[in-house]
Picture (cartoon, rainbow, N blue to C red):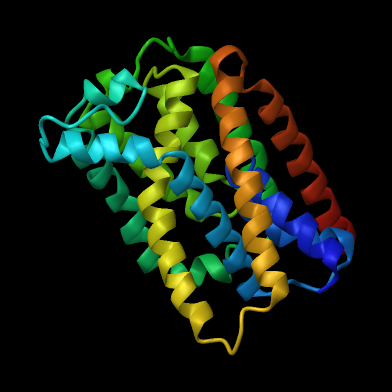
Length: 272
């Protein structure tokens, strides 16, 4: 694979995995749009391992705090600066419960997701629809609630929304951010919870992917570069997004999703 394709795809994965614009659609469509040879499943796996590492690194202290609170481990120092985590001792169990819907559907629909649902028409449609839903959710939301106030019902609602991310073009971060806004979380809290909720799913998927890669004769330099570049890019994008949502709207991402979705559908018609 040419080095420029390795770099472009790795940066693309690092950016789109966390911005609410769908990484699966971008990775699937990039070779199709640029006329490149498909990078193959092994390289996609490497990129996802890279962004999984970035989530673990960035939210390591948050997860230590969540685990300490959930297991009622007293006398430990505060790990995270987010006081909301400390004030919600049940968050660990809420996150576990919220992970179940996506986990079950992922196992049941794995083959369908990897074949039937990878249509550019469907991806384009989901890009547009979820973008419009995101915009409507922000407009209607009071955006007054934080992690400290989240309930089991909130987490299950967002967890069920996460299951919809199995459809390419939906975006895990996009649909869970939207669901969080529907539950009147503020934008920054909705984004933070979206990342925390994604951690168990992406770690489990990355662990399986890593085992699959071990069966290969060798990783190869391109896979290692893909992991490194997507991981570094992912950390930078997470930091940017959490700061961005403190004072800014989801509108730029909505506009991008709608325009990109329309372009994808139009190109699919033109090439059919």
